[in-house]
Length: 224
Image (tube, rainbow, N blue to C red; front, side, top):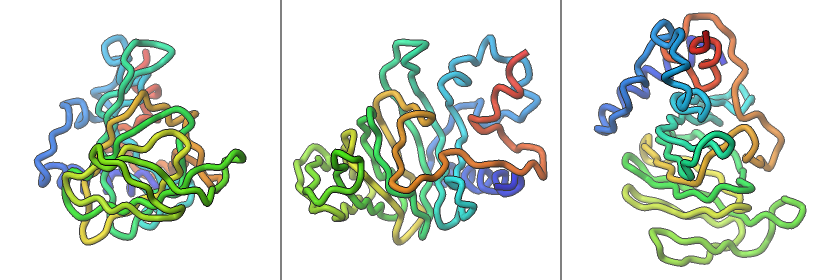
């Protein structure tokens, strides 16, 4: 992805978050200069990968397969005792997050507002491929059995709990959607199993200065 494209995506996201009355922490709006030499004070943000995270999954088609995430809080099993994480995500119409599961993380996915969120579900089999077994999940605490490949539609205010080894793919319909995620500690470097081998973080072409830093940018700016 080009840095200029990432800057445009973040600028549009700021407008959308504001329209949804969803407030981000003050450091979300820091420019690169503000981060210089801050590691002593901001190491939790840096170490636990809090903040802006824009990915095209290495496929170079962000508008078709991509996701904008902002990690608000997160623990780090190697460094602290916080056992939970929270993210805000923006999902556009026609934009898929590819089929994947997590080996360790249990998560709640919440439609915070906008359009409807469609989630396609499969269980993973013993070879970590798609199983034809039904998927047993809970939607807002109510048990539900979904056939393999079935869809759960979340309207604003609704949520689904996804245990480990449940493959899921999601996308928005009707309108751009603000999606929340509340989960166990999140480790995007080691706890994503994509059905098809793809990348988690984009390769960035630096054609412009960053508007705001991504989680993958911090150490280049915040450390002494």
